[in-house]
Length: 430
Image 1 (cartoon, rainbow, N blue to C red):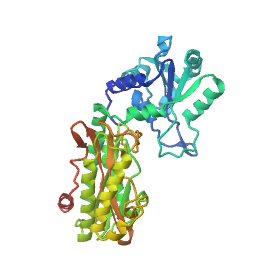
Image 2: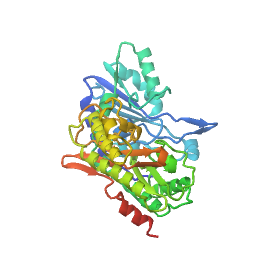
Image 3: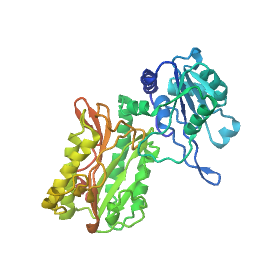
Image 4: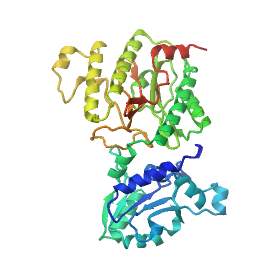
């Protein structure tokens, strides 16, 4: 891993929080993500299962975590199973965790090799009443791949039909959505790296530069500061591409007079930053670009102030939509009389602002969290309104990452240039 070691206290506390959510005589079993084939003899880069990482800090394939607080055998109440290395693996793949290194990283004392899991499993099943399995329940997911946790759930149903199979999803969604101090610091680090990348590219953006050249400069900054890489595929969209919400080709040349929308974020210690900024390719916003930009910025600031404990995400998005509606009327994009007669279930503003304003952020860029429950202190959200006018080739989105605290909102990207004047000043400072 490129990132610096994380204090194991984070994972010790996380496991204690988790144990309080388990009912009596239940065992919870977490698997690392599969190593996914790419083509031929290659695999995609491995990324740890976020729930397993949140509980252990172990960032390695073929890892299994067992938590069984009521197990009559104290050796199996908290167990980590690791991939057993050998000389061949060491030569071809490099170093893997030793048992002692895993103890230091995770705080878990009972460590076994992964090959022993099938031997231990019958002992666990002989005493537990229910088994909690870690199915991916992110409600943005449409999954068709039978990953390890799915395969294990089928195995338990088939081989232990008298046991009760339970879901870990609701527990992990509740716990992971409340960020601890160490998690906040790790996210701040991701945001700082993202800030440095943004400031760096501001100085290179000009007519004739390619979108992929900007992307290259971003990843250079990320890697040079110990980030793993991008937290998600970056969007670098100039001109008409700024109006494509998930534009990722990044292969056009930026032209004079165009707007450039950039949505990117660093991943540090598996924690994501998520930033969007929109800038003028030639270093100066036109009057129209400036008007649209200021409208989005106004809505963003008002929306940010609405991220408070007790707010329901769906209600929040509706209220932000009303704010955007007013700005779109002011820009001449919507007719006030038509808006008054619109179908409330299909508001007209969605023609120009068709996505939600905020999502949970954490180990996943679209992190899990109880979307239909009131917001709580410790929740971390993006705030990203936008206006997209394809007929004008203007797409503007502005996004920061906001932590809800007892004393209001903490903008983790407050030091990243956002006002028109400061953006233009940096772009014209060379």
